[in-house]
Amino acid sequence: MNRYQQLDKRGKVALGAGVLAVVAVLALAITDPETAGDVFALIDGNLASAALRTAVPIAFAALGGLFAEKSGVINIGLEGLLIVSAFAGAASIALLTNDPGAASETMVWVGFAIGVLTSILLSLLFAVVTIDLEADQIIAGLAVWLIALGLGPFAAQVLFSQFDSPSVNTLSTVAIPGLSQIPVVGPILFDANPTVYMLLIAVPASWYFLYHTPFGQWIRASGENPKALDTAGIDVRRVRYGSVLLSGALTGIGGAALSLVLVGKFTGGGATIVNGRGFIAITAYLFGNYNPVGTFLASLLFATLEALQFRLQILGIGIPKSIIQMIPFVLVIVVLALVGRTRLPAAAGEHYDSGED
Image 1 (tube, rainbow, N blue to C red):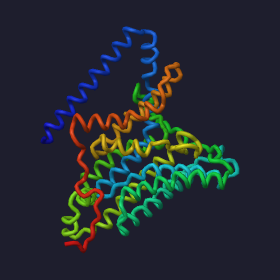
Image 2: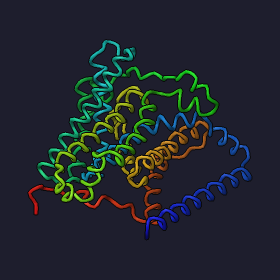
Image 3: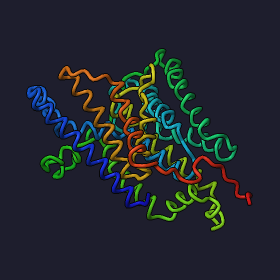
Image 4: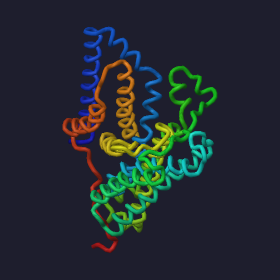
């Protein structure tokens, strides 16, 4: 199947999904007008704002995973990176201030930076193990997740005598004068948390960086044909190290945003505060076919489902959270089955030694 046939088939799938959605809405409106009116009332600017905030951890982690895999390093440890950055961000504020719930905005940003740095350091360890020591990338990624899954709650228990950190202050919403007064889109895009602005900048910046800069070209070549890149005189090892560290930085932003924007603390019970968002991020960049814009849209779709689930509960329409969490993975399976395989970079998961023939 050539590219144009694949795009045409994707369009047909999207059209089919849209038709089914319209039919479902009409059926609901006819059979239960009162409930339909309540559901329609939920689809407003507040839902869009909530979806954008909810998308931040998923989208940043997905962008991070995309860069690593584009360079040839499969990083399925995104869940672990989100856990350590969320914990480090909240814990550092709790340890550095007497009243973390009233911490200054500056201190919250300090905690945010510590969270991102922690994720980068764990990514560095992952890079050493997978690039220099040539460990299996899938196993190493699982190790990162499992280490973080145990380390976060354990450290919280040691430091705070419980699996959760104390509640901390969160980053304040910033309204852009003039733009925030624009009807409909103003309150959604220009009266938001700083991490939302960061995401809206990161998506086009990632696209431009990946497709229109020399280093972005090196990243793609490292994942597709590292031998050719090496022959051109570019150090494949350095490119992959840079990509993995960039993956850690982006995922760290998502994890810090989770504890210092969405929740206001680190919770270590069960699947922790992250609760599968790292694995949803993997489905997001697969669903988006390794394109930063498509990855963002997929993340926003999944985040909208999560935000809508909370609002439906207010109406007493109880949709189990496990069903909502299952949808991203089902969608990826459906897309791969109906549209065609999402093509991984040719050298993804393969080690490369510049001394190879």
